[in-house]
Length: 543
Ligand SMILES: Nc1ncnc2c1ncn2[C@@H]1O[C@H](COP(=O)(O)OP(=O)(O)OP(=O)(O)O)[C@@H](O)[C@H]1O
Ligand SMILES: [Mg+2]
Image 1 (cartoon, rainbow, N blue to C red):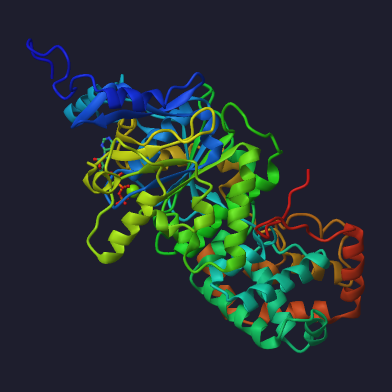
Image 2: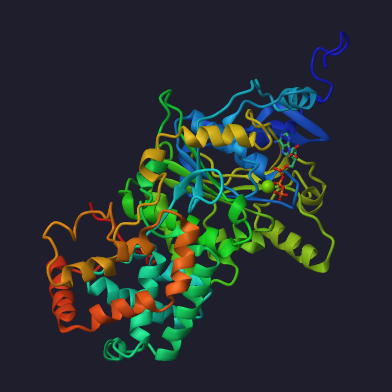
């Protein structure tokens, strides 16, 4: 790289006033993440550094660019430095290529070359990663939500309900919440719907006002088809605790929770909504802290457009509000997507930090999108933005972030540093080994099919139950309950198909009885209040 004639790297051009001036806009007195070096006048200037202050990461961010331009590597670079600074990170690993975070990078000439060009003292480094998998599908510790916690707004998104159906579903949850009936898993909710749409439930259905039998029937069918597609594994216990996303490794580095989504890639509505649920849980759990000198957690949403496609207006409003409010709880959110236009304007407007990789202009729509992207950048005399955005190399981006004073930094064509961890998928066997060894396995590893709300009610209403039996977890379920308490998920599903409305019938019997009605009333009053729901319709946590 360095010959006798050239003591500096050949790629480093002569000092450049513009580069120096741009870099001055990125000066930081506090801790900052190093993004890379300013490119101007035909090459990178290793002394002209582009960085983003840690204190500004709760002002959120956008990483955009055409496929293959370096978005995921930029995400990896940021996640690594956050971890090193002791900040826990959550990343949505859609393609599995972020699993490499757990292992030191491979290095090589290109990495060494880029390190010299970006003023980086690159050393191969692995990071503390916790692999998570929704419903246990894929290589990670299982993440599950109870139906009650998930709530009607997010479930409506999963089921792709229209606004009328969405508000009807909210009524069903309201009904269960009021009655103090925890809906643990999918079949609990199915039972309530089956009952409400059956003969015995007629009166209560009418009492719910605004929920038509036809709509309830549609929701029930959608729910059953979600179940048929194996959607039941995502809902139930043990439920994920948001605090488990906020851990530090023994060496003080922030744990990177990599949510492995490749196994559920083909179900974007489901996984994107689940990620949102995790965010909502954090939101409900965390106290207000105002502006900190570093975030408490940073959340990266890869393939973020999936969150918004086909979303209802109410859903969009809720997401926008969550994004806005979570900032003062010390959480930063980065959306990663191909085109900034994939995100609603109100969300985009809240993303203070931008890393825009190359855009391609194959179609007239592309050209429009390009012009729109240009219009969202601060003015610059240093670059022709339209041209720059289409000529950026891989691993280069146009950057503008918030300075420590909270003002937009000058636009910088940036050559990004290389991640220090592996820029590829971790060896699957190694990943499996790490997942198996995770301390979280003890809590989340096996699904606990505790008695569902309805089984518990049935037990309480049974003629002569032993007093302790109803409350105790069903370690040894009685034979007639065995079907529903098997650990084998496939069998469980098969059973559900087989008994079809059977569970519904049993529930209906219980729900229809006068004893139940009395119990439901007393349960509701014993609880003293119904479940409180947050912005995204998820259960509020009060501790
Ligand atoms: N900062 C970087 N340092 C070194 N190499 C990089 C960097 N960024 C990108 N690359 C190279 O470019 C390739 C593609 O990058 P990446 O996977 O991040 O693209 P992407 O924008 O996420 O693409 P997609 O939209 O298809 O997911 C990487 O495999 C790597 O070889
Ligand atoms: Mg990618």
